[in-house]
Amino acid sequence: MNLNLRITPHAHSRMMKRNIPKKAVVVIALGGEVIEKYPDDWRGPRELMLGWYQGNPIHLVRLFDFDSGILEVITVYRPDPRHWKKDWKTRKKRKR
Image 1: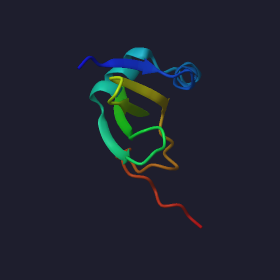
Image 2: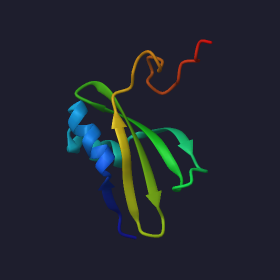
Image 3: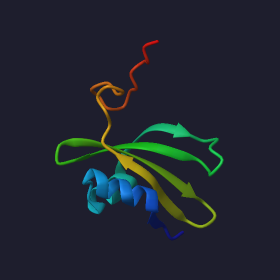
Image 4: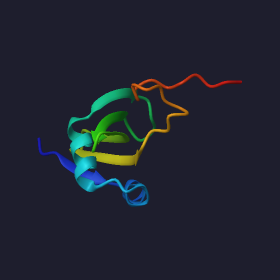
């Protein structure tokens, strides 16, 4: 099976706004750590990935379409320490 990586326009705009280079996105999309899975999303099974760029954590959401062989990066961001524990894998509980 051939694998094609696609970065959505939304993800591309987030990369530019957040100064996250394409090289980092590709490396994380292909070899990052899966920290959450969303198997029942209407677009198909998505995954939240954790990777590192210049010593800083980066999260991205990817979707793999088995029929087309396209691995799609949906969004990318630097996780906010107000919402993530220091391992950058675990969400903090929301205060009510």
